[in-house]
Image (cartoon, rainbow, N blue to C red):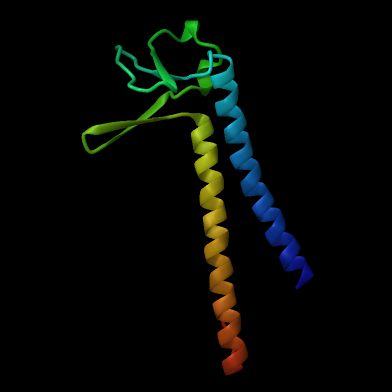
Length: 120
């Protein structure tokens, strides 16, 4: 039982490391670009935010590879995101998965105890 709890703690810590690394990546590019997150627009564009600014020339951006380089179209809007955002999302999805499995295991163990059967 103690080994299972230790393994679970290690998995949670691994997820939190991903979240932390993503935050560090985002913070790094923000700090080195005047307190704003650079957002890449290949052919030009505008950003309506005081926390972001648009750029088209990567040579003028510090740590441009950590900026919002990627885009995904959702409906008629574009979602732009960075490598750091991917790390943060991955860490939170991992935590969510661990939470779901934890709930599942508690329910399974309760049923096994009450009915005296073993699930596989």
